[in-house]
Image (cartoon, rainbow, N blue to C red):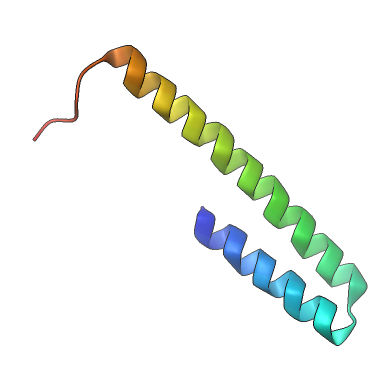
Amino acid sequence: MLRWVLIFLVLAIVAAFFGFSGVAAASAEIAQIIFVVFLILLVISVLMHVLRGRGPPV
């Protein structure tokens, strides 16, 4: 998921460099949304791991 954030971030930077303001804004907004979703899923995953109290199987 972080790969998609980086892809949209680079796309936004390149589009802004070449003057495509609409594409740059849309790409930056998509990158922000995906990053927020990633952070929410990360917090849920960490909380579930803490609440379970056991490690992954080896």
